[in-house]
Image (cartoon, rainbow, N blue to C red; front, side, top):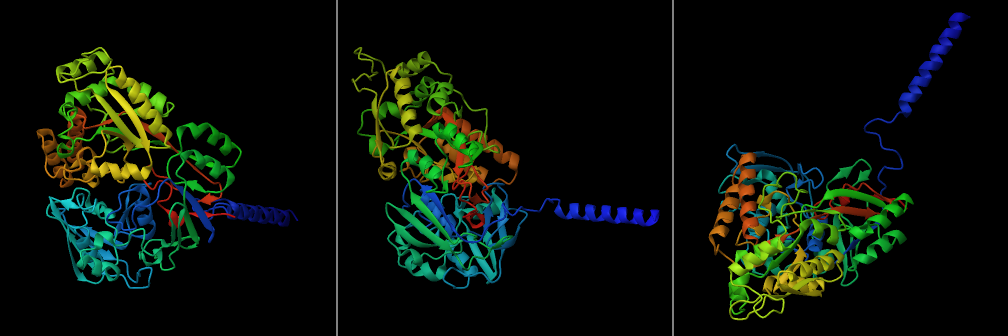
Length: 572
């Protein structure tokens, strides 16, 4: 009896332990509430319309976002982990000297129209990116040792990419190159019309890709609609990817409207950071279970202030004689109290910065840049040293010919931080006799003015797409199209510009990580000394989303919370 009772106890205990083990969550378990759901529609807000559907000429955030949704590259740099991942290529080997990479393509892939994918598409894409008629903003960065990449294909499943010099970024460089369909675009490249292929007037369904979604609709002034690509090659734990049936990018140009739309459920998430003044109400909504709020830390980029320094465009402007002097720009840097700027413009949710690389870019940030202590006295000394004084007592400095330091600053309308930033700069510079008149304009007008130098000064944020500086050469090199203070340059015009070009070209072809870091730190210091572009504070980033969205893996890089749309899902 005692034995049988003991056996019963042991059996019962064993069953209880077994049951507990079965019910206990493991590291790989996902509760039913968190598992991805197949199907449904997600609506995200965008602040502007796309300029193009051609990823090789795309430079605005929305055009780049559409490219990421519809196209794919050989490898992907995961924006959350920053690791290089196999994408259209399932594996690769790099040569010891860093001058070539052999990619092995995934078998059985097809374009969204059903055409088979092969190495011929990769060779076509490498050729097309350097089309001189197109002047792709990606082409400058995809020059290694000053020379284009070369690609050969031993067979339909293998591509060898070669470089004229060692490629510092290695395979992550190929994340910059979306692979495009040869069968759809070869004719336009041969005819010299590739730059105008796949415009926003192109029928959306003819834009072919290998991304998770296909374009189905573009309504100017309203929205972009995409549907799942049934031939997308990736699979997930919750079934075939993408999980969503439909993705809508709804145009919400007024940042102030996003919070109300999120709260009402009209949109599921913002595609960019929320305003700092929305943080407190967002916290309240989060406590009520109406939104999810994500804090990412410091942004890797910052609002920038710069003058157009193109000699051909401004030589007839008498103000150009002193604007081009580094002492003038250094005086501005001394006039701005960056601590106060961060407090006023970003409500304290920002950190002071002196260059384009912020503490948000932890790998490449350097704290050892020249810093301009706030000092009106020092600012006036610098201005006086180049002949600028208030000669008539009107509070504005003039040169010996009576040319006043008065400028119009262009910024984007409806962005609160831009409005506060330009207002703060106006007050700070006014104390040293430099007058700023602010003119907010629509985003489309901003985009049209930047390349034509149709402005005195600009206050704007130019988001970086990659953290590795060798993948942002379009900004650093004098020949780059994102060299925004002097876009017309084709060669360095000053010694300091020659030094930056030399350092950045070396940095892009250096394999040793520590040496690359030293080269970039030197380039940052030179830029901070000559201040062709001024930075004051980098904001902390907050993102909001509907609680019904699952699978969000946020990133500080564009497109922020939409980079892994193939793995996002929504509940009803």
